Length: 212
Image 1: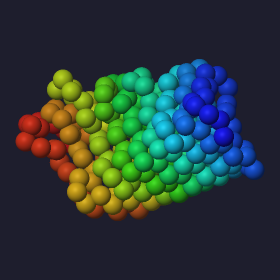
Image 2: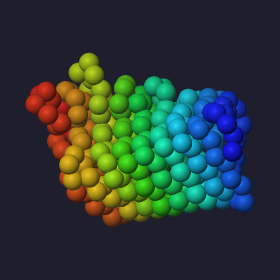
Image 3: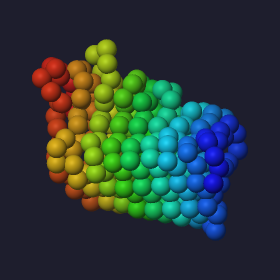
Image 4: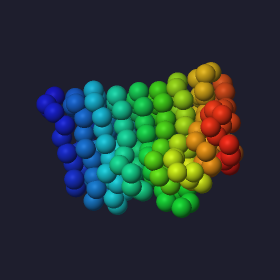
């Protein structure tokens, strides 16, 4: 156990097989810095924050990782990549992971393992936030927000499912397309198996226009 919140500004903080790391939170980045769980046991009771730069981010290859919340600063390029293992988090939020065009190598990328998340926010401050499910299994038990930008922004959130399984179990809001006026929301299901309880097109009466 490490008291407080360690900061990784370069290199890799790795939790390898046989290792255990319990922290309040972690600050990761920029400069390609990584938090990497590779067979060990990791847990954080507070927030894990990524400051993007040169693919800085959180990488789960195997083992078990338990998070309270994960987010990035409002800068393009942050990565949370799950290649394997078992991952749980109460929320994952990307205020911004791409600029003018969705870049699916950034944001939340799931290629393997089993992941369960409460709420997922994509594009909640500026430009685009993105998510790509390419393998493994991702379950969202709370709202998945694709675009929640102010100022009548015509950018927003984007997600795609190419493989694996994606499940959204929230029957209240489900996947919310264009939560705020004029935002753009993109959801592409071209492979794998997806099960979605509900899709909300426009969050409330204040959303007068948008693209979904």
